[in-house]
Image (cartoon, rainbow, N blue to C red; front, top):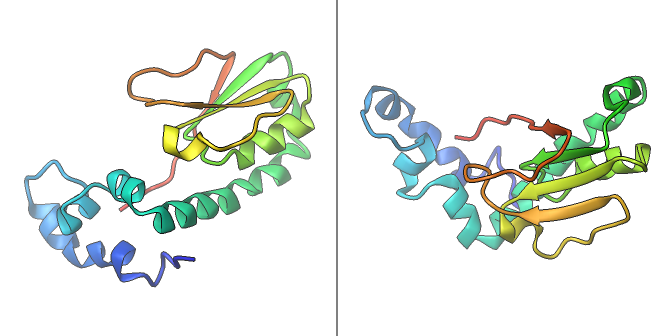
Length: 146
């Protein structure tokens, strides 16, 4: 497993922070330092992709605590799409807590291609910058990547 906080591949770009801030490139900090954008890097490095997905899943487990007292948020909804939902940790928690709610996990095809659907949980691969599956609500958690 990759430990992002100490891994030179993922943390090394921080050494280029000053050059990135004062530069005029349209690249991300990671792209400037590594010559390849973060998402492209993950796509060709399965070890990092797996570790990244696991890290995002751990973060998503916090939603379980919020659902205990915020069930009204989903009242009246028939469907929800979790954009950038990774391996579906958040959507699984929601779909189990609200079995009548249709949950769609939408992420890059290589992230969702081998994930198993359930009665009210499905996985769709695509590019959120081109289109997003239709639903009554959209869940989009924001994370900062270097």
